[in-house]
Image (cartoon, rainbow over the protein chains, first blue to last red):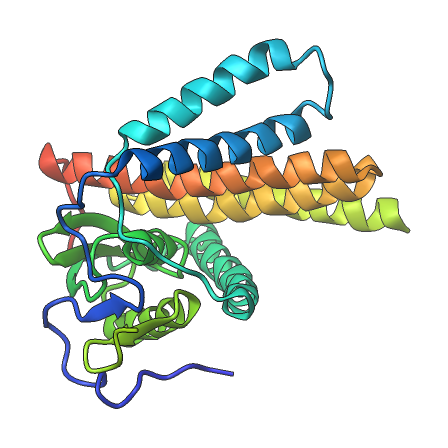
Length: 199
Length: 97
């Protein structure tokens, strides 16, 4: 199954970010958290960190001597991080994306390994710009990081609303590869276009 | 049988690590080298981790290995972006044609 962009998104490249989450508008300057929200975030972070610690130490009780301070410190640091726009992931979307991601990282690694071993080293490196269409937040981070694992592309810098991509071979079709990735990430995070409903 | 599959995965993972290192040595500039490290070494680690997890024989160990793979994968994508951004900002020599 290959997701395609909804018709209202299929338009020429180079435009402002246009995906919005169904829960909230992109928060470039997030609101200050209320004390209840801060407590909730502290508790959730601490719980996740505690679970990871328990797994890492095989549930050993004496390891909590280090674990409890580390979990509390980690949760406290989590409070200092800027709040990001809320996001949600679709479970079946996550499975589909994970499988696709695994296939792509194999493709990317085989491609770069082939170039490294080839006696003539087929490289035509260079930078290309691509307009970012996700607002700041989890989907954008996912997009930028995933690009580095696709064959021949590496996200080098975010310049305003544009992403600067380094390519091993600039003859490759960057725009179609990246807009396919955009559609997949939009499906993963249950994002709709601006024209869609805002829930 | 399990050992054979695990050994093949680990061996294949080593091939990708070697590819990453060859790329690091042969590629012309820092940006191309980052491609080699993030992609080839990333898959190399995934294959070695999968092989070792098969051999570990315990769910706890397999989960820990999976966790290590996940954190390394996230960190390597982020680090390569940061290195590339710094290299651009500091005017690192670029092979461009």
